[in-house]
Amino acid sequence: MTRRINLALQGGGAHGAFTWGVLDRLLEVDDLEIAAITGTSAGALNGAALKAGLAHGGREGARSCLDHLWQRMGAVGDMRFAHWLAGLDAAPILGMLDWIAPFSPRETMGQLLSPYSYGPFYRNPLRPVVEGFNFAEVCAAEGPQLFICATSVRTGKVRVFSGDEVSTDAILASACLPNLFQAVEIEDPATGRMEPYWDGGYTGNPALFPLYQPELPSDVVIVSINPLERDELPRTPQQIQNRINEISFNSSLLRELRAIAFVQRLLAEGRMEAGQMKRVLVHRIADDDLMRQLSVHTKLIPIPQILAKLKTAGRAAAERFLEGDAAHIGARSTVDLTEMFG
Image (tube, rainbow, N blue to C red; front, side, top):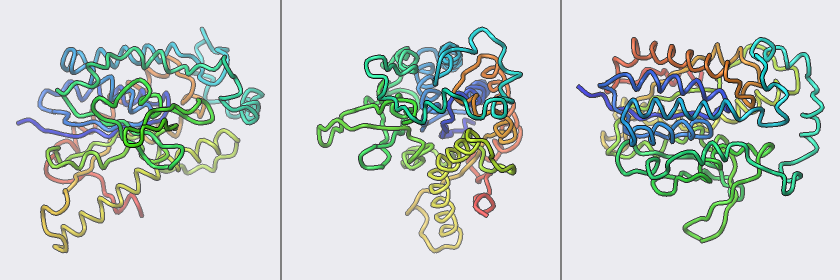
């Protein structure tokens, strides 16, 4: 019997290679059908690669497309400054960088310069990666529905791109951290006005509401990149900024999960008639312990060795899900939402 799920893919920079591993393992399960994908930032890139690969060559095509995406990501280099780590096995030292160089001169300059300071020399390092997608396949009517989330700079609201709206610019907008990249301008079809967009993580990391359509399955599998909790107090500037980003990028998702928990409670207590609102079943694949151990720097430095380790960890997390929580698909949530908010 085929089990149908929706995927919600968080963003988290180069740590999105963890999601690569999760998807790689899920694609090996023949009776697991992906009906829809919502993704933000790295989740948007993973979602586009998954959709395009399925359209091109089925499950093996999707695995190959994801492999190719992260090979290209591994060649991007440091997205903030010169490739001073190029050619080195940086994995052993990245964990110490927060303490070795807590006041990096380049990052200090980053506080004084905006992405607009570079004038004609500015280049979004992700553009060549995203332009490598076949958008006829990414936007194909067949296969899972794909939703890409970005944040309107002008209104502060989430915009969800789907169907033929998904483009190079839509994906770049979804991954546009404003202190690193210039805002991506895309036409608003309602007004004809060109609107600037920033990273979707500020308003939906990722947005879940596109998955509430009645024709889609009830089960939503969230692939989490940003840890919900950290026991240790952040002390360096990089650690502090990273935790601020984690909290802000998790907040939109937590708000939607609170709404789901509220509806579930109303349905369970009989205070809402069945069928009035969709009964959403929530599952989560994550490795918060690993994400807490990783250096802040590895989000923006896609070192191939670390990407490979993240892929392996993602496959292991997916395996744990398949051996446990996956048995409850279609029956109940495996995330205790009340405990999550407690």
